[in-house]
Amino acid sequence: MKRLKTALRTPWFWGIVGIFLLLLVNTLKDPAYLAIGVNPTTGLLTGNLLDILRVSAPIILIALGMTFVIATEGIDLSVGSMMAVGGAVAMETLSNIGDPTSVGAMLTAIALAILLAVLLGAVNGVLVAVVGLQPFISTLVMMLAGRGIARVITGGQNTNATNEPFRQLANGQILGLPTSFVLAIVIVLLIALLMRRTALGLMIESIGINPHASRLAGIRPRPILIAVYVLSAGLAAVGGLFSVSEVMTVSVSGTGNQMELDAILAVVIGGTSLAGGKFSIFGSTVGALLIATLNKTVLFLGVPSAATPAFKALVIIALVLLQSERIRSWAFGRKPSARKPSGPERPAVGTGNPVTKEAVA
Image (tube, rainbow, N blue to C red):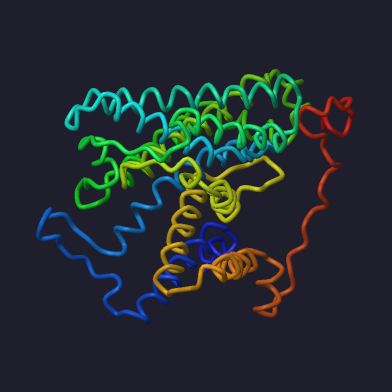
């Protein structure tokens, strides 16, 4: 019973509940919705669940990067543009090399895409950590600049290429699971080990909780802030590679469009506060899977495109209400537990406010 109460207070638990409820709705409409079959042409497994896992891979990666940015009390509105930049570099590289079976061409395209995104992410980090711009402003500028860079790279045209090893990133399978999903989970596990087995994760959380007190404790916020924006941009570029490898075409206006909103929703659903501080990698992954399931559900139910945002908003609002302890207390007739009053408001990163006794405490 105690474990159940603990689970009910965990935000990502309600994300898992949301996924099951969406799958249940789809199954009620089509009892064969969860069926897994075999493609007679390719011999690969097919099914709606596999489609959900495949489309969730880019969302998982951008949500993972967004998690660390939000944990530092920031935000990255440029991840969708970084996806477009990564896809544009990859498609242009592969189309110029022209070898449809070259693994070297694939690796070159991946390396160049990540490198450019990392450089742009470093610009974001410098603007926030060194120049002192608000994250919302600096990443908003980079969101616009990133789309412009993608247009320059592709000449303003949708670009396609042919490279079978690169195409397998999204369309191949490993042990029956989509390759992109498996790679995304591997990346999540590696970064989780980095964050939890080293002091990096604690330093990110400490900066989000109180940057001034962290500085007095010997933590240098600037390198860490730059690192989280670099990581966010690099992961977004990989997500863009997964997106374009599915159709082997990059759309400078469509690739990654509004994906930053999905990333932010996934992080919040997973339990990471927009006010910064503690983060949940597993929670963000669950949130990304929920967003992917919701997107597929909208298409499967045939929700009109004009009503799609409202439908998604209703589902997200219902889930967030379930995460609220006060709402659950009202629903089950219990008194909400008393919480300790929150401490004094801490100054935002880069505001230059003087350190007070309350901030150091």
